[in-house]
Every structure is written in C-alpha cells, then in structure tokens.
Amino acid sequence: MPNTTVRAAAEGLPAINRRRMLLGLAAASTAAAAITAASAAGCAPVENPELVRLGNQLPEAAAEYRAALDEIEWIAAEWKHRWPLAPDEITMPRGNYIDGERDIAGRLLKRPGEEHVRCVRDVRNLAAIVATDRPPRHNASEATRARRAHWLARAKRELKIGKAYKSQTARLRDISGMDLAKARVAAAKKSLSDLVTAIMEQPGTTMEGMLIKAQAVTTFNKAMARKYPLDGELWAAQLAASVLQLASEGDASA
Picture 1: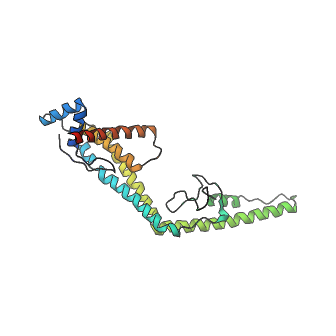
Picture 2: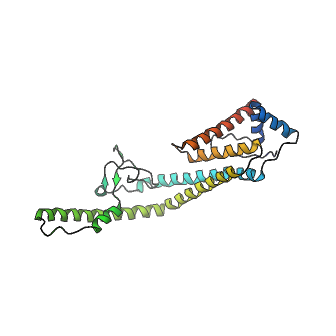
Picture 3: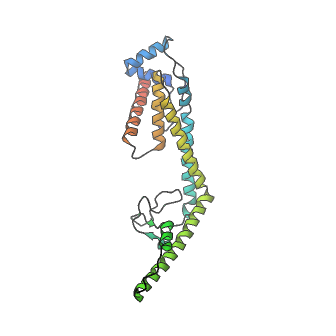
C-alpha cells in the first residue's frame, strides 16, 4: 500500500498521513488490523491510483475556496462605510430573504437601531406600475383624478430614485471587485464540489480509499460551513468525521 501523505484539507482535520491513520484504525478494528498486517507482509492490494491522485488535490481545492471567501470578507470590510443605504422613499419595514436590503456582498443588512431588515422596492415592479398606468374613467370624480395623478407622480419619483440607487450600487460592486470575487467563489465552490464527486465515483480497493472518501466529504462540509445541511449531507459528514476521529485516536494510542 503506498505511503501517500495528504495534508489537512480543512481546519480541524488531523494532519497525519494515511498509513498512520490505517494503523490507528487497526487499533480499534480487527478488520483494519488484518489489512495493515497484510500490508506489512507486502501482500495487501494497492489502492486505485486515480483515487489517490484526486485525494491529493483536496487541500489545494479547499484552500482556494477559503481564499475566495476571505477576499469577499476583505472587500466587504473595505467598502462597508462607502456602501449607501437605500433611500427611505423606496424602502418599507420588515423585508425578507427575497426583498430585504443587502450589503455589498449581498448579505441581508439590518440598520443600526432597527429591529428588522427593511424591504427595498424592486425597480422592475416600480417600472411595471408606471408602464401599466391607465387614465381614469371618463366619469371619474375630480377627487379620484387627483388621487390617481398623485399616485402616478409618486410612482414615477420612486422609480427614478430606485434606478439611481440600483445604478450606484452596481457601480460600487464593480469598482470594488466584488462581482469578480463572487465569481471566483462560485468557480471555487464548483471545482471543490466536482472534485469530491469525482472522488466518490472512483472505486476504492483498500481502507486507504475509504479514508480518502471520508476526508473528501469532511473537507467539503467544513468548507461549505452550512448551518442547516440536508439530512443526507449531515449523515455523510458525521460518518466521515467519526472515521477520521477514530483513526486519529488510534494513532495517538499506538
């Protein structure tokens, strides 16, 4: 079995090589003990070299994803005080995930001293309101005509303000580099996800292959840092973490 070393691919992952991890598993599992004994005798099966090659790419892929996230945090901090709040004319109380006010990184923004995130009126909706305006009926009262004229003037004013705000924030995201940084994050996330998928699709022939796959799942979940993962993802992460922890504890006691 090749003594291939893989650096810790995520924070908290034991920085030990796979052969030592196998020895740790042997201390807690008779099956693993048999495998390592066979390995010492030189008759253990050799792990799929493509799986090993892909596993060795995990640290770099995870590091790129974390670096891309760090870049977003840096830009958000640098531009925090230059990011404009939406004008009051186009905001309403109690926004939600869809229409809530956001910062330069696209995260929901709660204003100082306010309990709830504000809702920012969408420019497209404002434009649709103005575009679908119809004159009042010929027998409408003067009061009705006056109210409608006032409503239309207000809608046009809010549309103008909304367009200006949208243009201003788009310009800041562009010149700050946030758009490019977010594209980098998306590419790094896809690259890491594709790598883990490729690892899972490769056949494993030894306990080393099991550890590579466990390391891949653990690396992905730590990198994503999801607060509410799906059950399947949670189970996979727990299993992978348990395998790695058992190997680490066995190594420490050897």
